[in-house]
Amino acid sequence: MNNRERRKTFNAPTYPGNYPGDVVKYYKNNFDTPNALREFFNPKPGDAILLAADIRNFTKTSSDADDIEVYTFLTQFFSAANQFIKQIPEAYVIKIIGDGFLAHLPSNSAVRVIEVAKQIMIYFINIKEKFNFGFTNLGIAISKSDIHMKGAIGDCNYMDFTIIGHSINKLFRTLACTEGAMTFISDNLRDIIKSQYHYIYLGEKTFKGILNKTACYSIIREKTEDERKYNKKLLCSKENCSEYFDVCHWAWKVGENCAATYNNNDIYHELKCSKCLNSKCWQYSYCLPKAINAQNDKDTECCHICSNFRNCYHAFHLGRHLEPLLKCDEDIYMFLKSTKDSFLPEKGGDNGSNSSKN
Image (cartoon, rainbow, N blue to C red; front, top):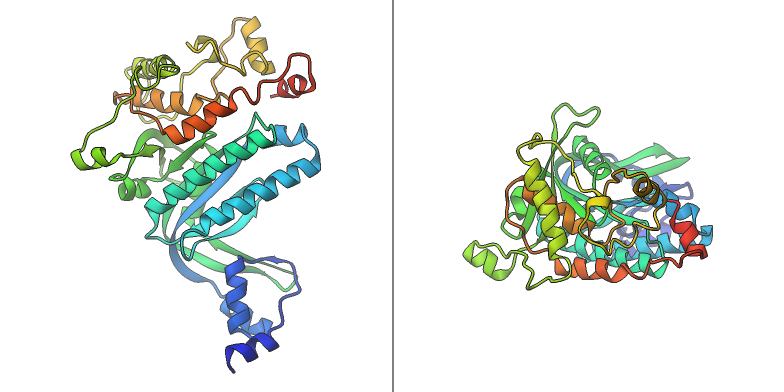
């Protein structure tokens, strides 16, 4: 039976399930019955680069917005993310999970995956500004899986295409501690991309159900051609960033001061809103917990809703590991910076009352 005949006799599954688009197209071209389809679905071992993404603070954001607005936001974001993933041949989104997704990419595409993650991050920053979702952000985790099983689970009532393995469990544990607007990577991925990207070691985390501690790293930016060629580091300076250099340098100094006090392998940060040198900390007056703590002279931990948190977080960890203050990723920084004034609520207005319920 040729492909045309197969297509004529193919009976598409009528039961609920989750199937990547390209997989369905392949099945339609090569299988003529659901039984043959199920046989093909038998689990098979594989290796891949895995990318997981999760929207931070989305519970609060969705509670402040109309359901149709949230639906439209997620539809646009997931559609765009899928298109970015599809730029890499044989890559696909396996499934959407609530306000996040999991993607499967070829094992030889590590550097390209980091580029795609940056594209997804920048798109998210733009679309959240469009919807005025100021208190949310995107966290991404990427790892290399050397062995996992992929196939379908379930039966004719519901069949789900999925991947199962120890590396997937670790990936989602890492994703859970990922900060907003950042991309965390696994130890084995770091070894692959270290000649192309600057990253910073954040520490180790003990996860429930996983025997050994998991090391976490955050991508800072791609190395310049001169950095790769001459093995040098392009540092941040007041000349190339007059507006925020003092803020990032303050965060770096906080990290440096913590170096001798804390365990170097713990994941933490000591950045406090009330002690930040940035007088333009826009969310401080509109975030209710921060405002209450300020009135009571209590410290409040900095978080990803600040447009410069990504840079301060990296600066802190560079300082605690006694590394020089690297120049940040200007592309992501400029988009984050552009959102700062966009989310400034009017005092006493609807946006102000919504934005205070962090």
